[in-house]
Image (cartoon, rainbow, N blue to C red; front, side):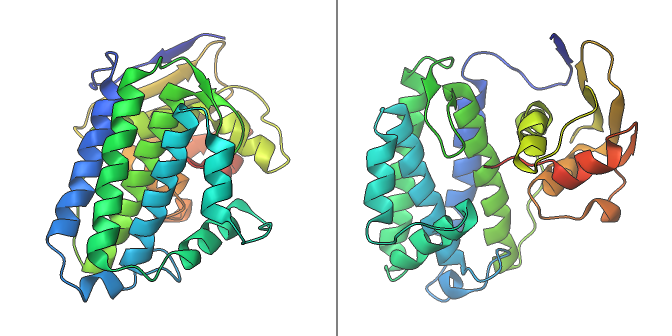
Length: 263
């Protein structure tokens, strides 16, 4: 099945890793301005401090680097040692954070930065089409990079909210909106539901340009509205009813309910 994708974002080889690096740098900039008390502020993630969010990102970057290096199961075992089996992915992530949350801020920041740099290096050196292991099964290295971009963007916002700061959206979100569109079949499958047919996104990008993701054959459901809002809905940081997102077609309501950018 073919796809038509439009937008102002350059999609040359390496563009996703470039976007990931830029997103990591935005988070690092926030961390550099923080004092000790800031790390203990509650983040936008319920039950997690700012420090917890950064620990989680460091851990998942380490898992992603291990995935590219072909040692994902070993890394999972190392990070979850002694925790037993979690009931869900979210529960497992919370247990991993609790296991390592008593670290000084300087150590957390260094771990985050070192892991991010290592992941960037590995992603640039590998074949973007290579299949690698991840939480929900195998995916391409390129898709792994995009999921890391999406998660880093989500949690950068969580940290910024904890610090009372507002971040401006960028065209990096094109990659995240595309990921949300392309992974709709996974999102529906995870919920035990099935799409009626192809879905199109007709979004207003961060620069006002059209970000259109259109399937072939013709879509039976179309979602229209603001791209930033779509990404926040997919991140479970904004309710669809509080946005200008609108849909038409048999799956419109279900798409806005189930769309996601993470495992």
